Length: 470
Image (tube, rainbow, N blue to C red; front, side, top):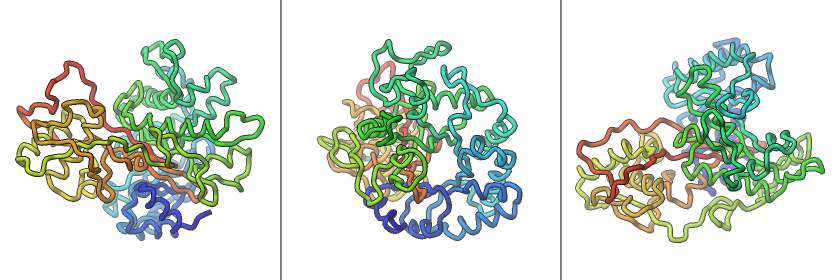
């Protein structure tokens, strides 16, 4: 496998700005220093019991693995264990304590607003996942799940969920159509309809995510976002796994990327971003188990691509087609008060996700109204499908063919955005993700006319969705 420096070189070459580690490997954290790449680190399962039983052990872990690396290494989240409730039940009683102890250490270091704490769950914690509206968490887990959700809600964190339509498909004995698992188009009579909500589900991924949302609602938690921390499809399998193929792996991962980038959300929450990790970056030739367990990667162990993702007809691994690509930016000579009013509208009623413009986020610099407005205008323009009239903003915006992205600030319409919203997981335990945070707390300017020359009676605004490669 590549060394940490080689991995970081690959991430930088592919313009991946967010990574997740399955542990807190010191060499990897050092290699990621001064790259501005956002990093999620993990507490391994074998360290969970000690941390969950001792506040001082948790504090020492944070000191060794977090404080000794920030701010040079841009650590933004900590995942406590992995699928603890289903794979390590003896540690379940201390899981929430471990999360609280780690969080307390972050509070003491004044890092709690910058670094979120959560724990990844297997989707099997949700029972009766279809119809999604009738789903609920395994009730035997309630003594842990309720305080866990309270913790996530009180700290502004997210529910981490591993979603594998491949396994759902394999276990269904033909009940789940392959096209439904792969995001392929289905005729209306083949779509799954929730009889209680009448919501239509065109893919397994959305159904599983919504089942988790409904499960949280059943316990009276309605404002915790979901982050999908693993998802993917194997490219090779043995005779008992005929659908683990290069074509299916390519189809699933390519369609997942498109699904998330298209701002569709889920039927229950159209417009609620579901940050997603694609499993995984490298194949693992030495991993025990079936052939498919070794073949989830986009690259082989030598760094050669296993297949080329189909992103809008692209011929490269991660980039998308830039033919006739256009962007919406603020006019340099526009009156600043008008630009500010348009910016406030875009990040308010226009429902653009302007969190990249927050301080310490990738698009904060340059901290000018023109630069911030250009990002917000372009986000709105592409959210609305680049429709006529969506790059006007009362005359202060203009369309350009020059990509305005700069440094780690990647504009929504950029050819690099397909990379930035995707993350990888591989044997060195690295992911890439984009963190999901609430809408920017700006309000609309009074008497400001929306940027469309013709205001439509019915318009659905959705914040950008985000994807990550694992």
